[in-house]
Image 1 (cartoon, rainbow, N blue to C red):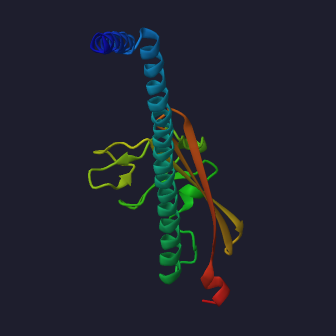
Image 2: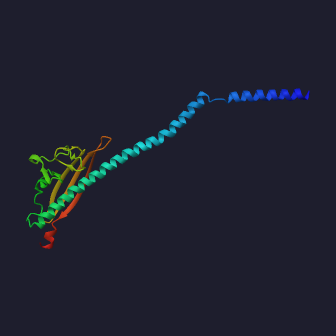
Image 3: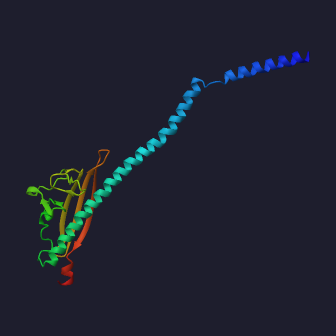
Length: 196
């Protein structure tokens, strides 16, 4: 009797365990959908963050290039000023007259080429600098459009003493937006102050 009671209890508990196992055997469709939703949310957030970070990185890269192009033009103008002074030229801004016109000019610092704007109408920032295979920028041909435009304006503030140099760089970001970087520098006729 005791043996048959134990067998009945075992059979009953085995049957209960089997029913419980069957009820926990798999996910329901609702549980699966909730799990997929949680997974999608956990993946989408970092991907959106990464995408925005890449956009910002590309814009920053272009801004750095724009500042280097502006610095390149300023150094070219300072070098031209210094050469004029050291050569004993009476006009300390000799060779930069195209940039002193109301329309400004565009520079090719590699080929020592200064292009003034036609008819005093002003230069257009639509004319893009060319990027050559060696990584340099210029206004000649043989390169590919860089997406950058450079406009240089020199305004002599005090005759034969001080001039304001304005460099305007325009570029198109990877999102298609136009950005403009303006850099101003004041240059001086240092030889006049020294009595040379």
